Image (tube, rainbow, N blue to C red; front, top):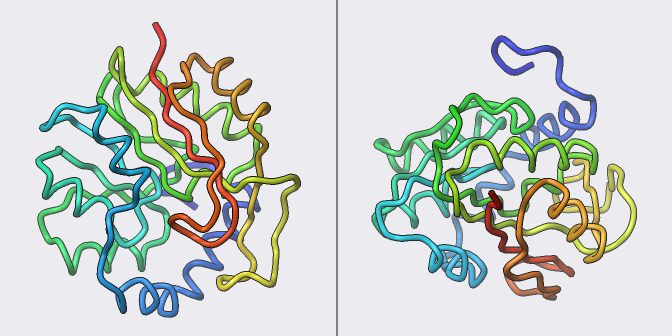
Length: 212
């Protein structure tokens, strides 16, 4: 349960449990190789002026957050897996970190110039994602930029054959993602299908701008 919130949906509960159980393996895998700036992150940050206020939504152990802070952005990293935030704090004591659920974001309206969500929104249902997009629209300033990576394909569930088994994964096709984002007030700037670019498998890389 997130602090002060109602019980989490079982999909999120099971996903956080899977990440917490597999945290050591996850951190070992990510920390044994040098950080490489994800190409999609570079595209997203090019839309934003330096010193912009940005939210790393589902920041994990903070790899992208640290990069953005080094680039001059004012970054807040948010995640619900506490061991990941502990790892992020050890590596960057001055990084602003928040332990919270992305479906109950504890931020004020018009707080951010940009939202970055790398492989995090794939862990909530399509209904929850639609609600989240509307909330993010409120949290971003006019002209704010949203960037995300989501799993390409059909279906959802708790696959056991993943390297972190038991996480909830929701897959998307281009037309449905485009439709739901437009309905939530986001103008698509870029929507590409990529394979094995930053992570294994097929992904949808999206960049969108907050509409009026």
